[in-house]
Amino acid sequence: MPAPSKPAPSACPGQAPQAIPRRWWLVALALIVAGALLHGSPWNQAAMLWGNGLGLLPDGVWAGLTLLAFGWSALILVSVADRGVEGGRAVLLAFLLGGGLAQALKLWFAQPRPGLVLPEGALHFIGSPVLNSPAMPSGHALAAFSIATLWVCLLRRDGRPLWLRALAWALGALMALSRVAVGAHWPADILVGAGLGVAVAALGWQLQSRWLRQGIWMSVWVALAVELLGALAAFTAREGYPQAEALQWALGLAALASAGWRLATWLGQRRARG
Image 1 (cartoon, rainbow, N blue to C red):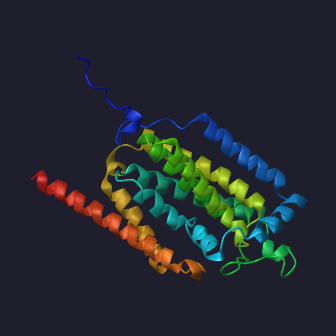
Image 2 (image 1 turned 90 degrees about the vertical axis):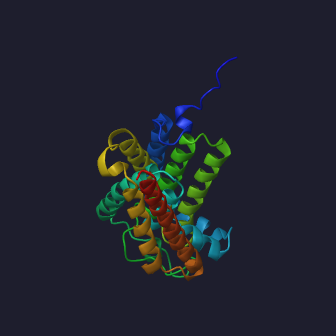
Image 3 (image 1 turned 120 degrees about the vertical axis):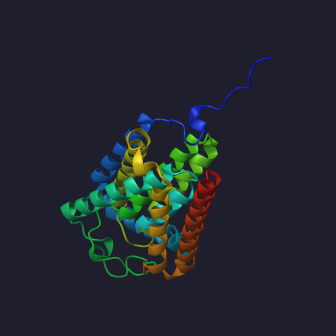
């Protein structure tokens, strides 16, 4: 009688993770190049007006989607999705890499926001209009595609079905597109931010899975700190989207619940070891 087959290593949390597919890097590059080509062209303004005026979803839904794409939301959404520690480690690295890169590029391009360029009344704003900070690239699109990329990394690691991975990519795309819907970003900003989000998340996953596998990086404390930091931001940040205030509180509570579970599990294991 043949021995029962064992699951593939990539389907088991804690095993050697799958490598990032090469096509992901090509997709990231294609998005960045497409955004760079669109940047400054008349098509950028036309696409902004068209996308902002579509009104495919209610304002409250767009506000909720854009709230999910804040940096602190990324910390919560990825870490809470993983009962291990890889998600927390990877999203922390992506947060640090992506945040620094986005701010440096914003200062470099100094692209004004749509609300400062287009005629008054041309845009439908949701929440408090974002006008004063530079536009290119979209930090929210970067965070949205970092979230989606890391979700898919976790789903691939655990051997989850393809439809769940497709759903993760689709939700990331909606979070990024919400920045056009709320009147905050040009389409070019979103394309570049999306490409950077895939790249920094893939790099963060590779860093944590291949090189940072010793010492404190392997402990529960990294994921615990990530979730507590996300909860603190969720309860204190004033993001300018009152339509999504309940969602913001729900994210904070989810982060606290996950952090409490991690701490209780760690204490239980410590007691069991004597």
